[in-house]
Image (tube, rainbow, N blue to C red; front, side, top):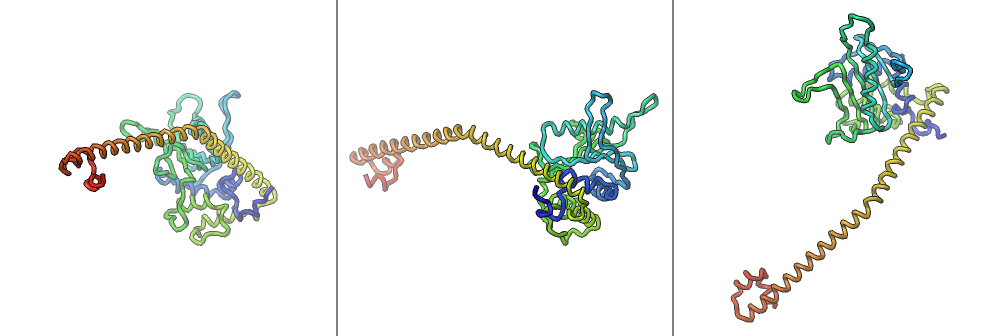
Length: 315
């Protein structure tokens, strides 16, 4: 297997290993706090501390579906945060995200009488290595979704928030970075492409990202785990690219005969129109010749035939 070290200095954060190495380890908790505080600033969220919770959530009974989060955390206020890196588009992805978000809600239920159903906020954050098919035309980077009253367009319930980060839509280069969140997106999208630490990203928090993401500083066990994670990521990407290419070829083969037929019909219609115009002009030239022999005035011939004086004189 091709060694990662021959390709890049830093690990790929879109792999399972890379994502959890940066955001999912106790010594690196400050990175996740900083990222979430920037991402959730519009929701007036300020996280001081985070506690990692078990990522596997069991169903109520043995026959219920279990889920495994990438990261599942709780802050000092008891608010819940699901943070996921989604590498590939899948059917019913939005349904899956909604289903996952029900577990932190159910966890808050208190057995017995006397519970007033007051819930702590739940945030489901998904960093996507793809874009939604139905995304806005302006290609948003971040989609923030909450329950809304359709008539008043006001938020109906602000304790359940979905944040989708469509990373392919982030296309700023380093000179266009304006905010701290811009820097986070830039680093995540380009980390494994850097051959050195960019001069314009010298913030302390990013210095730590670069330090822990250095491939050559990984332990032997971590390198092996990363290589396996990287291989899975590449295989998945290659499979998707192949499927997309094959789908394009199938669609092209399916519609090529229709396109060719439409083009032929268009060409035939243009040919027939040109022939009709030529026949009409020939008829007008014939009429103009007769009128000219009869001594009709030039103005009258022009009016009746639509020919120019030069054309009439040349008959």
